[in-house]
Image 1: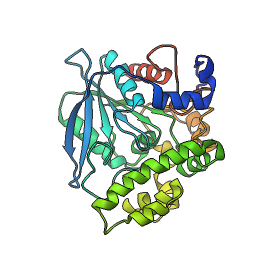
Image 2: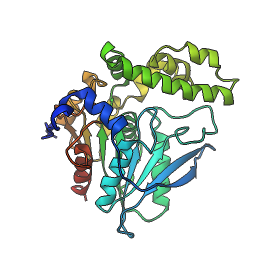
Image 3: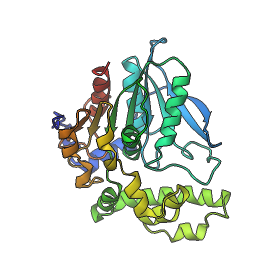
Image 4: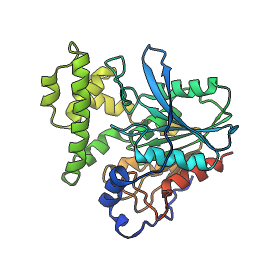
Length: 321
């Protein structure tokens, strides 16, 4: 499919990548009713909390599954904004809280990571068991977008009910993206992620003292240190490099057979060159790559309450059905 340049032009100051990124992540207010929470039991004995929101059309057979980013959850403005956009177009929405990302720590030492596509598969199986939804869309943000793309491109059977997917600001190449976020210009972002994840690991160390110690967590001074200490080991990888190599969506794009829109802003400082898979998109029948010049990281601000990527995601899904 041809690469899409996109026609997104943000208002004034939001042409600046940092302004759009920070405003959208921390200052944006999304008027949205409370979710209805459901806890599902996973096949390995753990649990995951799902947050549901509903369209006014009570009998809709359309559902979107939303996947958040690193250190995120269903209450983030970008998750609520996307759920609202789909609800307004008569889609129900279910927002995943990855393991350990709701108010309660999950049961096991493992939690979530960019390649945990089996957890998405369990959510898909669960919603299909409700026998209510014949048209299902997937939308993944950042790390959740990598998980979603990996799921779609793996050697697995994708249910025919999944009509399409959209990834927003996706680090398709995890190691390359880590290199990008470790640049000096991104110091504040990387440090914020690091501190957030360390707090998460301190809680895990209290619950699982035989597996990890607070001293080792405190000694981590980078995101890679955390991936070496915890993310890789807790999820069956040898080390951080092994995790990045095996979990990156870039290795699975060629296997995608579901119509998929990938929106990665050209000025997203979190992404490396490999996160813009032009060649895959040009050669694929199913992967549409849109590279707007602006948008930062999940920062596609508009002059209305509906952001650019939210309208694009809904329009793309509606065009698939």
